[in-house]
Length: 214
Image (cartoon, rainbow, N blue to C red; front, side, top):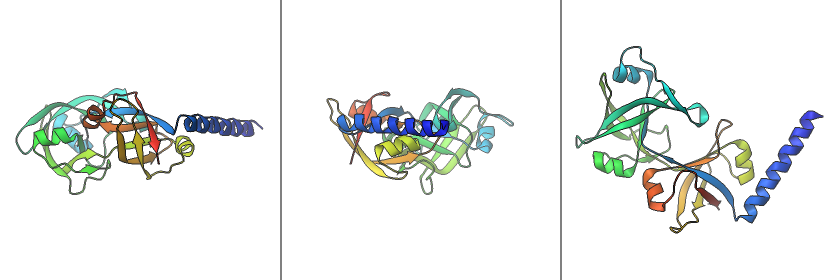
């Protein structure tokens, strides 16, 4: 009986959300502006920070990820550097640097627009830490804009994992972003991720809301 009650309440809440969003003209999503950051393998962590070193947590993020206290310096083909690039944990199977298009121009690297994890054939980059340096032959990308959703959010929005949608920003810039990928997982909190270039161009800040349009 208790389970049935929970399921009934859940359905009612989802219906209420749908009704609210329809009245507002679409499903609304909060924005998170993503600054440049890097994911590292444990091997690369130890090269950069010392043998046996483990990343230390600064702030929890969604999906089990967290911002680390550790930062690195990235160096491009023009031997131009950007300091204090935040490391995100936990460690991964492959190291990956996510930057903006403006960063790529400054560094002199041809970073492609890719979904996180898709680094095959992406740009090379050098990374320096307090104890050492690594050279990634591939792994530097400009992250494809995307929306994180829980299954309940996806159901309410009428979308599925992997869908590509457009979103509208109702401010003085009146921006519409196409090619926004939907990513669905139980661990995700509802949020659209864009980089600093996209946010600045659209005059958007973290916490602003956008509307999915189809």
